Length: 83
Image 1 (cartoon, rainbow, N blue to C red):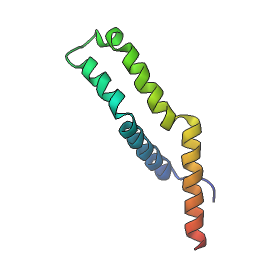
Image 2 (image 1 turned 90 degrees about the vertical axis):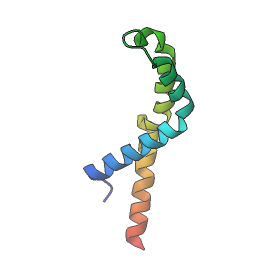
Image 3 (image 1 turned 45 degrees about the horizontal axis):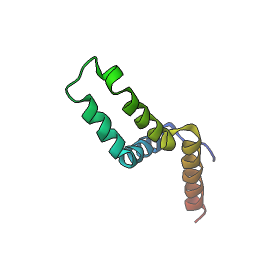
Image 4 (image 1 turned 45 degrees about the vertical axis):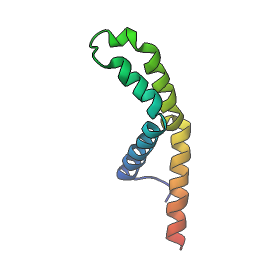
């Protein structure tokens, strides 16, 4: 079976997002510092920092990286079933 259940998909996404946040921690902190104490002005004052955070996160959670994660998970799951 080469399909993921909804639970497996959600777990993979959650795990991948957590890894992305860990890997992108320095840029997330920069954005958080910029946004601290702001309300509406965060939209334009921290726009560049938000873009950097989004670019970093997409490296791990974009369509291509997520497909690699799914394939690796399926490979490991199938390998366990064989053994």
